[in-house]
Image (cartoon, rainbow, N blue to C red; front, side, top):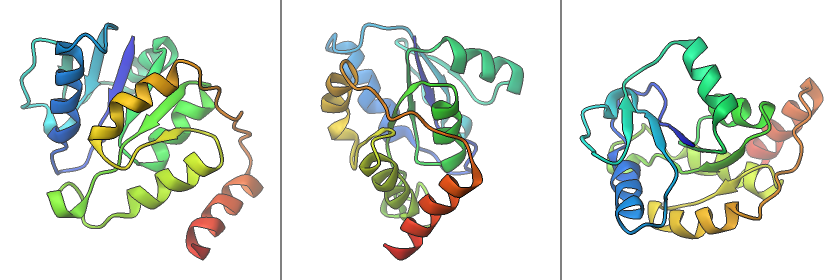
Length: 159
C-alpha cells in the first residue's frame, strides 16, 4: 500500500494527485493508494481512497502498514516516515502554484535527498522515475537525536 500525505496546509496540492491518477491509469502504480489530502480532499478519483484528515491513531497505523510514503516536503511528515523506517518520496509544494508561501520545501527535500534519507523530486513529472528508483532504494537509517537534527538544520541554513 502507498500512503500519500499532503499535510494540513490551507492550500491545495492537486498537481501531485493528478500525476498519481495518471500513473495509476497507465498501470505504473498497481498498489492500493490511500491519500491524506487535507485541503485537497475535494479532488475526485476512482483510483485512490482520499480522506481530508484522519485521526492520529489511524494515520500512525497507515504509516506502519505502507510500503511507500509519498509526501509533500514538510519536515514533520518526512521525519515520521524515516522514524518508522519507510521509503519516502517527497515532492515540494511551490509558491508559483499557490501551494505554499515560499519554496522552502524544495530546500528541505534536497537536503534529505542529498543525505540519502529519501528520494526527492523537484517536479511531479519526476514521480515516475522516483517510483522506479524506490524499488531498489535503501534509505540511510535515520538516527533520531538532537545533534543530527541540528546538523541538518545548519546545513539548510548554510546553503
